[in-house]
Image (tube, rainbow, N blue to C red):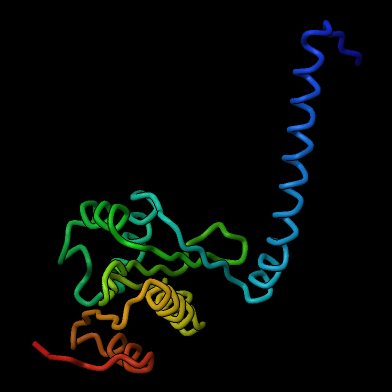
Length: 178
C-alpha cells in the first residue's frame, strides 16, 4: 500500500518512524541481555522473579499451599487480609515452573530495616525436595544483604519438624522457644 500525506505531516511521520526504529533497537539490545538469563533458567527448570506482586496472585498461592502449614495458615490469619498486607508492604519472590505458567514456590519478607523478617515461605507439595526452598532463601539472603540487613528472623512452629530442620540447614538458629 501507498500512503499519501501532506508536507506538514511528513516531518511528524518521519519522526514517528525514527522513534519506532529507536524503540526496536532498544528492544533488541534488551532481548540480547535477557536471552542468556532465560536460557539459564530453562536449563535449571525454573524462573525466579522478585518484584511487587498483586494481592490476587499472592492470595492464590497462599490458598494453594494453605494445607502445608502446621497449623494451616487460614487457621491463624485471614488469607485475604494477609495477602493484601504482603502485597502492600512485603517483598515477594515467586519461582515458577520452566514454562512460567505455574507458581511453584514463594517467599514474602520484610527487609526495610537492619533486621529482616521472613513472613511466609512455601513450596508446593509436588515440588518438595527439588531445591526450590534453598533457592528462595539464598535469594532472600542476597536481597537482605544488599539492603543492609545484618540479621534475618522468622518464626516456625516447633511441631513443624520439617520446617525447623530446613531452617537449621539454612543456617538459622533457635533464639527462643515458646
